[in-house]
Amino acid sequence: MKTLRVKILPLTLFILISATFVFTQPENKPKAIINLMTYDIGEIIQDSIVTIYYVITNEGSELLKITKVSASCGCTAVMPEKNKLGPNESTIIKVTFNSRNRLGKQNKIISVYTNDPNNSIMRLTLKGNVLKSKST
Image 1 (cartoon, rainbow, N blue to C red):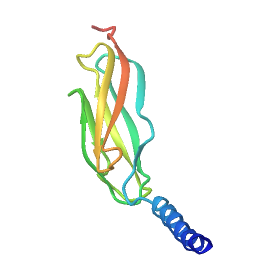
Image 2 (image 1 turned 180 degrees about the horizontal axis):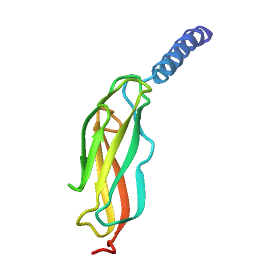
Image 3 (image 1 turned 135 degrees about the horizontal axis):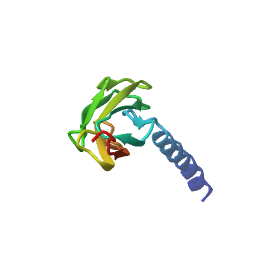
Image 4 (image 1 turned 120 degrees about the vertical axis):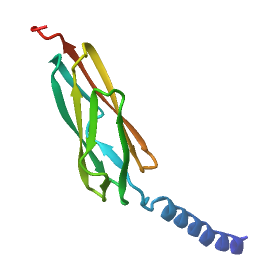
């Protein structure tokens, strides 16, 4: 019985150490992080144009690609400064909202598509309240 225990103990230790090594290896993949998911522009006057900037950072170890950006409305333009980010690199996503022909509560969704396997589509929100211009 002692011989069997002596043979099983090293095998068990080898399996435990191997499993620990496999599960603690850093994953080689991009990791997209956005500084702010929702931006509230507050109250603005109708026909105003508001520009805000989201910051996206690649906290992964592989190249992050921004493959597509879109907005839920034609009144909102989305433009990333760069489409490819190396590890620990950041870029700005410029979002411009035109309140022409808009009135009341606004809630616009900006979609950012990436090659991050855990966060391939990020939905950002731009919200605010458009007030009627006093001149109209």
